[in-house]
Amino acid sequence: MSRPRVRFAPSPTGDLHVGNARTALFNWLYARRHGGRFILRIEDTDAARSHPEHEAGLIDDLRWLGLGWDEGIEAEGEAGPYRQSERLPLYQERARGLVSRGLAYPCFCTTDQLEAERAVQREAGRASLYSGRCRGIPAAEAAGRLAREGGAIRFDVAAAARGETAVSFADRVHGTVRFPLTQIGDFILLRRDGWPSYNFAVVVDDLLMGITHVIRGDDHLSNTPRQALVYRALGAGVLPEFAHLPLIVGPGGAPLSKREGAASIGWFRRQGYPPEGLVNALALLGWAPPGGQELLTREEMIALFDLDGVSRAPAAFDGGKLDALAARHMARLPQARLAGLAMEHLSRAGVVAPEGSPDVWEWVGRLAMLYAERLPRMSELPSLASFLFDFSAQACLADLEVKRTLADQKARRVIEALAARIGSEPLTAPRFQALADEIRRQTGAKGRDLYHPMRVALTGSPSGPELVKLLPVIEEGSRLPLKRRVASCAERVRALLEATSGAVL
Ligand code: GLU
Image (cartoon, rainbow, N blue to C red; front, top):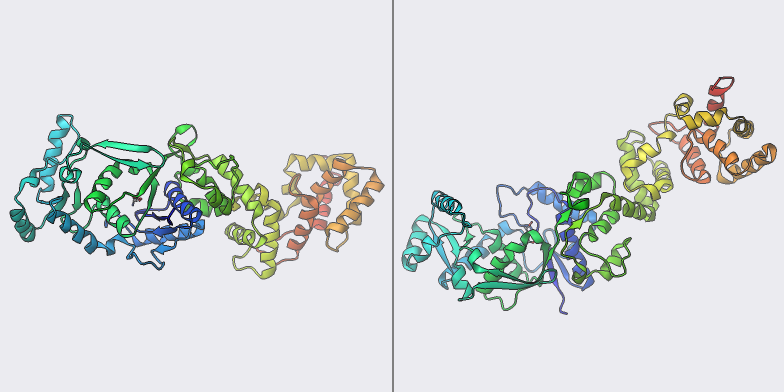
């Protein structure tokens, strides 16, 4: 296969959402799999709804997802400019060419006339198609009027179809798609203001940019017959290969809710999902890897991806599956990446200062490592780790399990033995193990009877990460100048014993 050229062509009219991000990803994967080029083109012909800040946001989100492009906006490329608003002369020139070859014609209908025409069609229960009123204006007259009063340019569908009654194209997902021409009216190529319609601009650009595969959402399936005719009118020998990706729905086919993907990529980003996890979940929206393994790295996806694995059936975005995959990816992130994500969320929660010294960054990274495998999104870290900060024995005792443990005779013997031994020097993992051995010998408590009371007393919490890993993190945190203080293990044990000594619990 010659090297494919694919493109992602968002309109900068809003945030990047799951649907568009999936389109970008499938194009990116296809290009990477086949050693092709991935192009980013901005389709900003809807001037009223397009905004530079949306463009900047799309670019930022694509970069965050790790979907870099080889050509296009903010990248080098031979086929630029890559913003449609900077390509108007290209469309105008081609529209004029089509007029001169009898494949398009100037149209002078006013909005009122068109609206009246549509109203009649609606009443008669017919589809609204342009009547063709301006098609019959003799070419010389039309050219004169166009120069004097201006006008739009319409595509002459019948002329472009050369007597055929249907248009067909090959789609990698849908097979051969045939569309009767009776459903296609003469559509606008160029508006009166000189700006192109979507269906015209997209074809001019895909041709000039040498696009070989058009991979996009199947909401565009009904546009493709129009585009196929324009390709032909513009003299394209072959059409690109099309692949229309299935609609994305919520679980059970319901419309997407925010939690289930209707939210923007920025929302997932602010929640602290690792981009690797989100990209993995997006890849499974309509594509099933051969072999069925779902947890995939970027490299694995690139090695496995193909359009033949794309299904026609709507794809359900399942927040639960995203979370499961995201946590697995989180657990694989290097400590420095975890620290970056965790700093963002802990500083937002007011626990650490956002600037943080290298020691604080290191500590935050180790803290995040403790939780990584159960964290789909880093925004959950502050509440999971909240027991570390602003320790208060009274607050801990509000937890019934903590209270019960401190009141239990056997457990209390373990805790008292611990309090007697725990000095002011920090509790490292080996020191903790040595202490645990001594207390086991002294009290005879083993297994859970030994470790559970120690956990409760040393941390103030009945559950959490493995003690040998958690305790050093508590101890180091207690020596750092954090915005919210971390009490040391010794302080915790003593305060809990004191708060419960002699008390009837
Ligand atoms: N600008 C179109 C969109 O955002 C692109 C469609 C296409 O890929 O052809 O839906």
